[in-house]
Structure formats: C-alpha cells, structure tokens
Length: 543
Image (cartoon, helix red, strand yellow):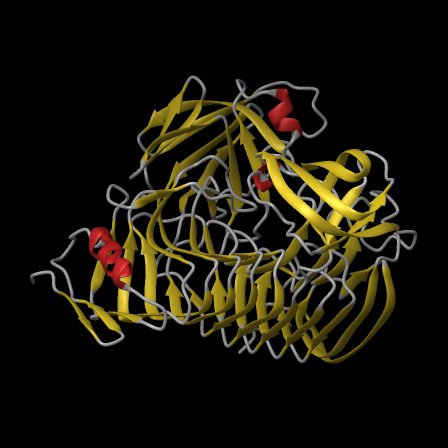
C-alpha cells in the first residue's frame, strides 16, 4: 500500500505501510506537521522503526548509559495538547531505536498501540552439567547467537556484536542475579558489582553449548555456580542504553491502553516531570517468550505532582515493575553559596536532578540526619558526572554530605494492578504513597522501601505510605514479601536510623507464605492488620 499522509483540521493521519517498510521517516514527517492541540493518528497496522533514519539525540537518562546517541523516532519538544493515537497498531523497534521522546511538553496523551522489539530482551539457557572444575550450559534453540572471544562473551544482536567481559545471569524462576566475569575483567569492575560474581574461563563446545572453568581467586565476592541443573536462566541483552518512552520536564502526560510485548531496555520513564497517568498499561510477553522489558517497566526519577498507575499489568520484567525515587548527589566541595557535587552511580551521568527554585536538603550519609536546607538559585552540569549548585542561604557542609531535591517529590497511587514474575516493586520519596487493591504474584518482594544512600544513590525516605487490600502471593525470594529499611543497615536492624515516617499495612491477604511476612526498620510509626494468610503447600494453588 502506498504511503499517504493527510492533514485535516487538527488531525495528522499516517496510513498503513507495506510490510516491513521503514516507518521512521514517515513518522518524523508527520511529527513536523503537528501543532499544539493536534492529534497524530495511525491507521491500524504494523509499523517498523529502524535506526538509520531516526533522529540522533544526546539525552541524559538517569539509571541508563550516558554518551550514547539516542535514535529517536517520535520526538516532541515544547508542545501542548498533542495526542498520539496508535489506532490499535503495533510498532516494531529494530536495533537501538528509542520510539518516544518528549521534552518540555504539557498535556500529552499516548494511547492504543503495542510496542515490541525485533529481538527478545534476553538470551535463554540452562545449566546442563556441573562438576568440581566448573559447569556447562546450553542455549535455547531460538536464542540469539553467543560466541567466545579472548576478552569475553560476544552477544550477536541486530545492532551488532557486543563483547561483554562481565554479564549478568538472571534466574527466571527466582529472579536471582549473579554476574559471570571473564578472567580479563578488571578487579575494579568486579568490585563495583551489586552482587557476587562467578569468575570463569569460557570455551565454545558447539553453536549452542559453552563450558566455563572456574578461575582461582581470593576475592570474597566470588561465588561458584549454584544454579540448579535445568533451572531457567537468561543473559540480559540490555546495556541500559534504550528506553521505550521518556518524558522529561513535562506536565500532565497520559499513557493508556499501551502494551509492551518485549523491549531491550526500560518501558515508561519520566524525570523532572509531574502529573503522570498510566492506565491500562500492559507489559506482557508474547506466548512462549521469556521476558518483556530488560530493565524497569516503569521508572520515575525526581518527579512531582501526582503519579497514578491504574489497572495496569506487568509480568516477566527483568527489573522493577515500578520504581520512583530521587537521586542523591555527593558534595565534593562547599564554599558558602557555591557547591561542587558529584554523582553517586555511573548510570546517573548526564542527568541534572535540580532546577532553579527547588529546595534541597543536606543529609549526613550514615545517620541520615538532615543538616541544612537551601533553595537552588543556579544549577548546571559541569561534566557528565559533576554538578555546580548555587544556593541561598549559604551552607557549610563536609565533603560526601548527601544532597537531595525535596521539591521534586510526587504523590503516588498504584491501584488495581496485576504484577507477576518480577524482581521488586519499589516506592520511595516523601510524598503520599498509596498501593491498594493490587495482585502481586511470584515476585522477589511485593513491596520494597529503602533509602539508598550507597551504590544506586536513590533517595528517599518515606513520609506516608499506605499498603492496603492487596493480594500478595508467593513473593518469597528475599525471605519475606514486605521489606522496609535503610541502606547500609541490615533490614530489620532496630538500630537503623528512623528516616521513614508513617507506614500502614491494612487488609492485605498473604498466600503461599514460606517465612516471615515482613521486615521493618528505620520507621517512626508502623501499623498493620491482615485479612488472611496460608502457609505454602503444593496443593494450595492460587485461583
């Protein structure tokens, strides 16, 4: 079918394209026609997005790689009242495409489409043999090719071959993560990993089978392969360079009736934005596929206003189904009104979590005591990993003091959602948080609250959280489904600083509980009751 673009009144329409044709230039041409208040409407069909004709954009995205040009298809800047209506279409992303980028926009609506990728977000395999020297594994028959190189494993994807000296093994049965490190990987890189690592030398047996022989090491974080033979495992293909949808410095954004089947990266991401609604957002795999998103299905960083997540479904994501947080920065030097700051985690590079007029709080890293407050009068990125701030009034704080934006803090409501086969649901920050009437099955946790002042440097402390009328079913991997604490202190440690305010658990139903229900620490006020719980037995399956 021939390409047809038509503009009629406030509607720009994209007609269906020939099978497999690159829709990227057509979409970019249509976006160029949009004015405030317009709608972009797709005739129902399958549209393929390729990177060659996409717009190359330098964009810092928190918790993602910095310095990687984003290959953007639909790029909205400084627009108001625009609607993107997919008409039930499917958008297929090839290579390193980023389909949606929205900056400094007001009142946007995205609805009625499905996003998928040309390849799955993960490579599936199983351990087939273990002995005293190491282990062997076999890749799924439909997996992307993996080869052995002198400096690591080579993953062969549609955007090229990528060599990884360190790769994450993720269990699809328990969501446990262990890193697999090649002997050529640096000790510094291995020391910076969030969890333990297997140090082993790979050998190619044939196209589908690899052998790994353990390499001696006195590193206390080194572990042996203790995955069970036959356990479903995968390598995560994402290098955190891609997101499906980003809103930055936007207000009043709605995403509804949008489905993600698989995507090599994050799903819906927002930063420095406010008043965001996700309704009937569905992240679910196609039949027979292992995973959906290679990272968080939803992530909100330094956002404000109201965040509503309602009637959504997420299953088989390789990272959090939902995560809202701020970013802690560290003081490098302080000279009265002027401060030099540095980022906490390398994947925060390029993102500035402060705006002129925001209030910031200075926090002692160990005790989490609030030391001072000030208002930002100037803020800019000095380099990818360093900020310059000017504040009023002047402050006097030591190096390594934490700095948190306490203006960009949202109220969050997560209601009537279904989450299954996922690592965690994370909520934080000081706004009003309500998690109600959801079903959570086979997650590492049903609820995780943690003020992370190390590794990820994700703030914050919770002021008012209600977790009520949820069904929590078999969320046992971290030994209990409800975890509230403070990083740097063991969960449940009574000596942890009481940074969190009021947390209430009301009317929740716990099923297939194999251990304790919750571990709570670092909280000023905590209260709960429960409707029902049942101990795990093989005959007690949820309906």
